[in-house]
View 1: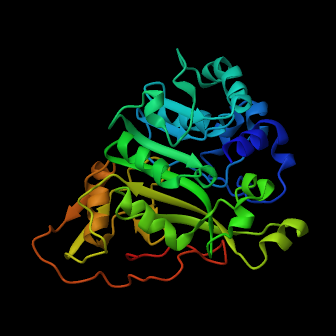
View 2 (view 1 turned 135 degrees about the horizontal axis):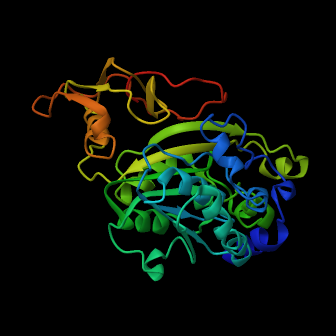
Length: 348
């Protein structure tokens, strides 16, 4: 299947116009601060973009960032601008044709960004085998990936390697495709469905235990949208399976609890994270307005307190008392059928 994916993205697809579904149509509704960054990126890089989400977490200045399945480098060059000249962005991909495009325009982007030297580098390799690229333990601040982990045959190995290379308190922030049921093997073996990021999709209820088994205790859903295939032939093959594009954030914080436990804690957001003066959206269930005391479970308290976000919050409470499960925690499918639902307050 790796050879199938390499051929699909190296030879079959010459650009986004060759895609047969809308799984990778994600540039509608870009945040305003991202739009001028996009204009700095070479057009050839933009036309070879196949992502399904926006993988630009907050507070990237000066950090070391790893993009898994970077393709032609669009997200790498966006992250390059947000991490600044003192940051480092490493792109990993297994498809030589894609990497050739990314590398061809490295000097162009260095000049466009006004950097004295390039802050990006591209490595050819497999995202399941990062140790072969000399990416050492606890060396990366942020790992991102955009619609690529679904293409990996061994998703557990990918998550395990990500956990290994992340620094304590580091974050995996990634977009991918999920399904509302497990995909039949006959569809997994279909090269077009697999290449279009559909038949390699994880069943959503398999994802959380898989992530937890690799050390990511409390995955947080940030955004999601339903995918409409809009290709009658492929729709006939997939039948009633529903697909979603979803963005998750996972933190390397081994002290997190398996459930959202109530310790009587709260936070106040100071409004100091760039581009987010009025509120900070940690995930789909945490819309934290500036200056307003916001009750949180113990896990959310740690996610904000023990990571790069700490300087932007005031923290109240500790872990001396326990009041049971945090109100509102549920177990249903997390995704919406509508992409317009706004984030709400409270825990999960």
